[in-house]
Amino acid sequence: MIIDGKKIAEEIISALEKERLNFGELSLAVISEGEDAATESFIKIKSRVAARLNVEVRRYTPAQISEALECDGIIVQLPIPNAAELLAQIPAEKDVDAITEEEKIVRAPVAEAVSEIFVRNDIAAAGKKAVVIGAGKLVGAPVAELLNHLGAEVSVITKNEGNLFDLKDADIIVSGAGEPGLIKPDMLKAGVILIDAGTSEASGRLAGDADPACAEVASIFTPVPGGIGPMAVAMIFKNLFTLAKRK
Image (cartoon, rainbow, N blue to C red; front, side):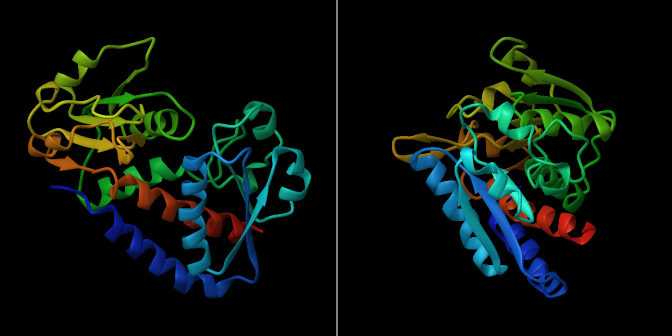
């Protein structure tokens, strides 16, 4: 089954539109540095959803962190110089990406999207062998934490640790490496659940870590684009609303 992330995201956003009536003004700070094309593309996508939900998006540089803290939620658009120092200044009650070192109030958007796919498709992770590719703050680390919480036997592969040959025995794979075509069909066990959360550019187009032909082997497959990406954006605003309720 190929997951239609756009359809699921639309359902989540439609529900949030109704929930929006319960709040007054809401603002989301986006902290970025420079004019990187990929960064601007990501911010544009988030801004479109924000407009639907009547959430004001305010742009800041790292030097304007004190102003950004006045908003209801904050996103730090990675990569960014001195990220650790910047993230340390963001309180958990405004951390919609669940990316700071503080105790999390919400779940990271990609992990929340993975959880949504599991729930919608009655996927039980308990006792399954799961492999997470990448250990980043936005994908690898929070997804590995989620899978551990769900009772899976989790191993993490990074550039310095692990081996892609380990994929052959995996029941669940979540990839956030950002390397186009890294995962090939012959690396996989038939019926694997393959969540591709890696996004990069190849020949001027967005591409995922998994060769699209992997869909023929997997029982569940998320394409790039149109899979995890739209769902994760929707989850940012779900998190914003959750944090706003606590105020």
